[in-house]
Length: 350
Ligand code: NAD
Ligand code: UDP
Image 1 (cartoon, rainbow, N blue to C red):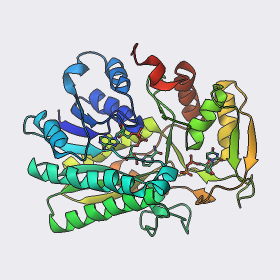
Image 2: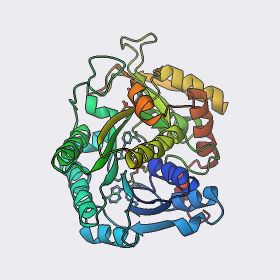
Image 3: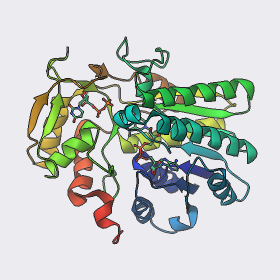
Image 4: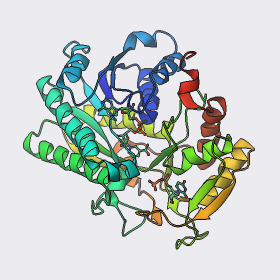
């Protein structure tokens, strides 16, 4: 049993990863400010983990940027932190354009504070949530990890900056064990429908938007362009089931623990691209609902295609995605249909 600090563990990817780690027998301390999440997610995680899992989860409410919050989190581990998985951060591209300093403060400043606290507490094993957004407009599809890092918005700049910081650290202090995981498009939910993505306002991303149209919270989807150079004219992305992604984190931890200190940089994606229209049709089939849509102009900063080459993750981690688009939609619908308003409508009855 390892002790792992999970920053941002109440969020979408964090909550599913907490469940996978609890089920693998680990002890977790979650540090989260709940700025974009709801503590009910972690109560659900405990229910799903069952048994005496509650003895292996400690939740600390606090802000990553405050050293006192980090100290509380490390104190809860009683001097032994075997690894940190660092999910905490802000991720809305459009908001990052309007509030770049906030994004640099939380995503980069928060990461600097975390790394200092890890060093103070003798923990040198880190899994960092990076993003395919660091590739900007990729020249070659599928995208390999060796592709240029050329982000095109402040959110992407902050992810690339933390990646750079981690590379500098790994070069100067060679005992660090670090994985920089570049997620493609995480979607879906735990198949129970008890935890899932819980956007605070109107969703920025396609999948939660389609889900909310299907459940009747939003009248209609706007497809951002049907004149892209793709088979049906709509944009293509590499969607990855959040449970596959969560399992990828466990695989990364095990490799970091079992191998020599290293800096790993891996794409976590399926290697399969789906267009916007394919996602709409798959969601309609899974939900039995119609998803009305119109076509709007292309969204600024969008690429036609973003698809991972996931072969390096398979080679290094022995991990690959197992769940297809149909499963992503079925599980996403299980969550959305049972929680039309997300956790907020359920907070008093977790
Ligand atoms: P999320 O918003 O659901 O979760 C982020 C969590 O971090 C939330 O629980 C939030 O309350 C917490 N948090 C934010 N700022 C904090 C702070 N200053 N101190 C403490 N806690 C704080 O997002 P997610 O989708 O679960 O994403 C997790 C990570 O993965 C993020 O770093 C994100 O940038 C990255 N990522 C996400 C996607 C995606 O599409 N979901 C894609 C690539 C990378
Ligand atoms: N998209 C869309 N309508 C929306 C949201 C997204 O047509 O309301 C498209 C978007 O142009 C892209 C795909 O769906 O082709 C995935 O977008 P998302 O924001 O989910 O992921 P990202 O573009 O950040 O990879």
